[in-house]
Image (cartoon, rainbow, N blue to C red; front, side):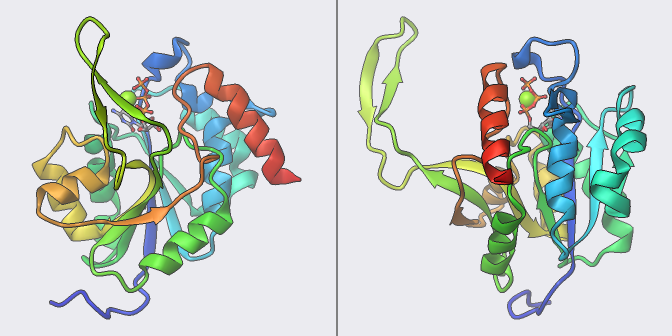
Length: 239
Ligand code: CTP
Ligand code: MG
């Protein structure tokens, strides 16, 4: 079945939230740390829920996660009935996303869109998601938000000495959201469970995801210092 010119396919979001946040060094998984009295994941879900074209938001949490139920109960008014929680997280991000895709597959068509957005990117703005959707609506494959590399890039050796300067032309930093068609994304993730993003899995099948210019405020919270940055960005977005 040709995928080109399939108009206005439905959009389901998958939010991988089954990581432990090991680089944050906190026993509480980072997606549950609070910024402005709201857990990071609640900021993320609130932004996704504000996008009317996203029909459902499937959150993938770890099977032994003892926090998500409390968050779902306490903050449901922030993100509403579109959010469904699935305790089917895997050992890698790719396996968590794949398990989420399998949870929603029965309710969506093979060429419907799956939009994947990290729970740990709470500063995404609904207007940026709208622009992202607009740019991909007619695309046969899909794509991702990304930023052209701004810094000079160095390759180091094992003793932390520079061995080369890398030409940064055409280099991009991948962000999320990333969005692909349901069936081919499931096939790609199943074939490459080590992929660190959906685009890498799609590339391994020979596809060329579209790069859509993102926003530097859409950071992924990884280290504790990122919390302060995220707090500032969230405050700036509110005003
Ligand atoms: N994630 C997931 N399942 C995993 C690993 C990660 O759903 N097995 C999710 C995280 O919860 C996060 C997103 O994927 O929302 C991006 O991953 P990352 O920033 O690496 O988060 P963690 O894996 O939690 O952090 P760390 O790598 O520092 O342990
Ligand atoms: Mg990780």
